[in-house]
Length: 148
Image (tube, rainbow, N blue to C red; front, side, top):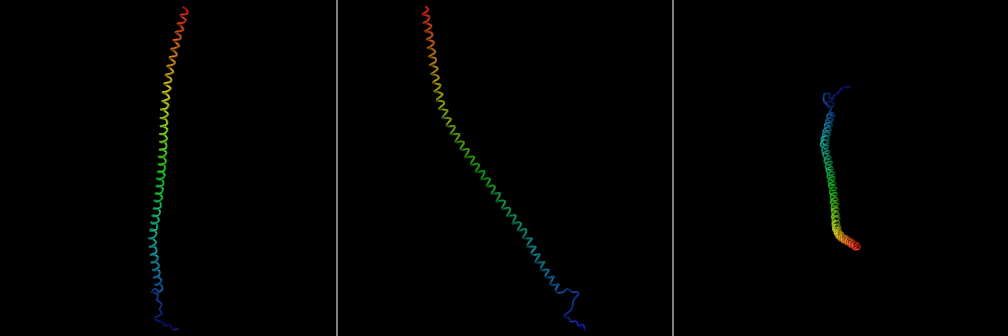
């Protein structure tokens, strides 16, 4: 067999094969796609983290605001209850003071009446005593007259 070499079919040893060139291009394309994906993901992850942090912040702020408004509402209701109780007690106190004032005036009238009665009674007692003394004096005088 004779070796006939055609120019079309030659094996090149020192050069790269055409398949390897295509494979390299495919690898480069894959790397470019991968780098684009990594770039997009590296941008999106911090973006999503920021959005998540903002959502958490707004939720906490709303909860704190709701808690504060609930606390303020509770304090306002307690203040209203306290004020109503103070008003009730003050009205009860004024009623008690009025009743005591009227009772005191009636007791003062009764006391003055009793004082007047006592005064009259004392005067009567003095008159009775003086009349007894007069009677005793009269009896003594009568006895003296009889003895004489």
